[in-house]
Image 1 (cartoon, helix red, strand yellow):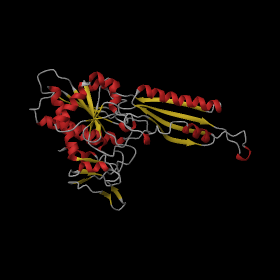
Image 2: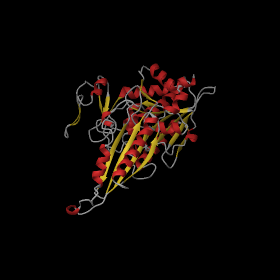
Image 3: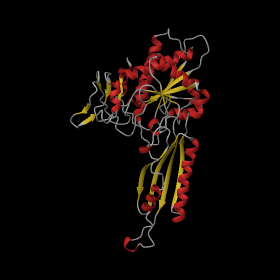
Image 4: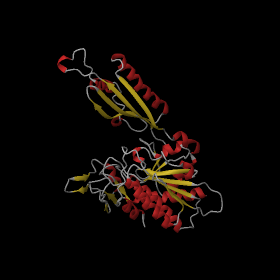
Length: 405
């Protein structure tokens, strides 16, 4: 099977994760998909295959060299984003893309427009896989899974390519931030690994946001509005006062690159009680800590005006893996060299988000992120150029070869 064959097979599985179930995997479709992959890996003849009750699937391609070389791992996630349905995905291949808008669903008027998605034009002349406009595609991260398995299959069929032991793993619930929570790093037993979970061709990332979530709760006092003077305390109005005290330009829609932000993701409120939920992001650890302190400072400021009105709870989510990667930068250099060797221009850049690799790096498994090739993840406009998937597969093979050298 080609990487395209596998990908088109894999997207048939509905594997949306769900952060509300409090289970691992969070949805049954992920386990069904993992069991399908387990059968495929066994048919290929891989060793050390394990699938635990939480949906973590691992396997080994044994090395074919007579010397001691590091064990390298490749990881991708089973789930797709909760942001849009992944059920009944109906992919379509647009052959030799001509540079015009792509009609995804004529009946509903859903069009992948170059004016809104100019990155399309970078792939003129290539074959693209697109959606039918009703679902996401699932290249995040079923493209990564297809690339890893196709690369391993190629190495099995081409024993002239020398490599050490290669560990592969497919985990659940990355999209809800829990993919690495129950990942058994000691069982995986690799010296380092790469998540095949990046975007466009050439992406290589070993930096990500430091991340936290803050829940700010405002307690009000409800009184009949006709008789409320000097009695009512409207928690919605106080919460609004708090929100506008944060820097206006330090929000996702005004930041890029290494710039951090405060992001108000939900408001739930009545006169009696209002809850603001923020996510806090910054690549720099010191600035990240200052952002958390700023929210605490504003909480105290509001309480000075309205005593005992507001409380705050801040929880760290993950940290920038750069501090764990820098001592072993040779693993990034290897990925860069592999890309160059197969004709891919590396695009080393920070992740403006998180990755399983960040959490795994802090659990003792250094784990940069490599492109899987897809674009416009998490929605109906998602697409993946076929040559990008093919190049990602070649990068995996080349990394294995370079490590053996």
